[in-house]
Length: 240
Image (cartoon, rainbow, N blue to C red; front, side, top):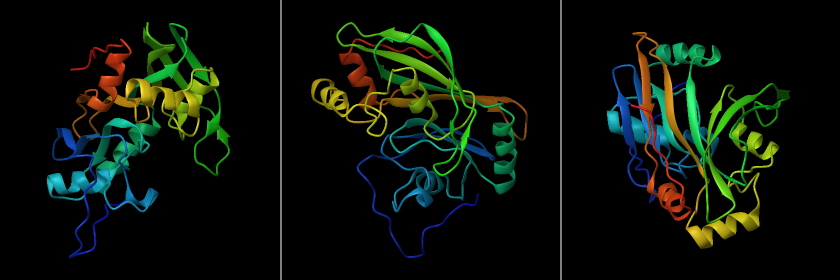
């Protein structure tokens, strides 16, 4: 997957999302904190303002996305700084050596923990393939019927966390594709939640060049932290 440059002489309009924060940078890798509403790569839509361009502009060189977050999902997003490192990271993902952790606000009160083993599509036009997500309950709201869950996808499928949580009857709040429109409107008007309630708060993996463990946490953004506070839900990461 190659880096993409904007046409020469063309300035790209900036969205109101603000600058992208870099959480980890070395000569081989970048981990950025993607805001909700920003696409990763222009190839997935016609947006001129995407995370890949922002990271490239911030470090002054091409970057290569090695995994994706949906437009509505915020949090830790990994890029390689060369095609060779991107290939090494792809093998690391394929080997299941990348630990990704997400925070999700869901409807209802799920069990304290569980494993969801339910086949879904890896791509929109592809067949169903095995998919596994581990989850644990972080907190239950005392002011509304919802819960904060930490999810660990062990496979990388399209909309995996959304589909798996809906499969166990605890859909993500703010999900316009797989959730409830009336519930989403309730949380927008009552708690000010105007986004998908899914945040990639941590990514950890062996460095593809040095072998050292890289463990990066993305703090909760204000557009998710404030609604969670109104719901009486708090989160304290144990990541470094």
